[in-house]
Length: 61
Image (tube, rainbow, N blue to C red; front, top):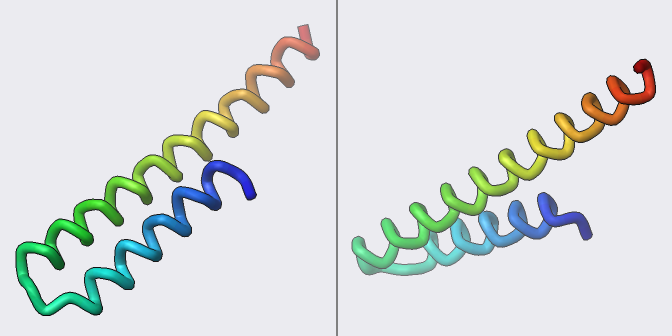
């Protein structure tokens, strides 16, 4: 499992936890956590994409 997949799985788990709780504050906490995990996944994917572009640029010389 890639780091991005792990982050997205954690986000999904947080969303599931948010749906299961009846406490408003706890639900909001889980939703913020899910948002943070999604942001980390997106950042990781963007970094990987830049690494590919940079490697290609080095090969092109």
